[in-house]
Image (cartoon, rainbow, N blue to C red; front, side, top):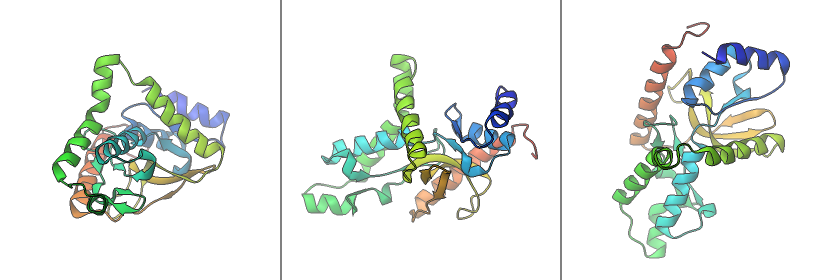
Length: 220
């Protein structure tokens, strides 16, 4: 595995640095980089679901007719097929989507949300099929993470971090909203998810832990 010689050498060259991992499978390799580096978990960040979250917000905003900058929603868990949309927490300027629809005279249905999530989850496959890769979107997401670190912005981003004791989820890397600043990941936010969302997140964590267990890592 190419990470084995690279990661320790990076840490030797810059022991005070922050590792930002974008290579897929990003959650597994983010965990691998952390174990190989010996760095505190806060200083190893995976790009995670930052692009999934941006796409989800855009598609939701288009459906509900609002500026995506006014809409908050997150994709959590694996950056991949088992990722989970936190629809129960999606809101426009703090107003939950169901209430926003009532205020705005719109109909609220679960089916369009499910379709929007499927489009979000499968977007990368469609881009790769048509263009061969998703270079520019990944670069834009990484620039946003680097900006938050460099400028110490304390920005909440859906990035991949190592989770310990998150409502029973532990010792796995996956995406949750995290505060990111000059020290790396400063805080992993605890979300009041619905029961179905918790079950989806735990299932995603189990799949990732199984893949991590297949890696020949120190301490495994």
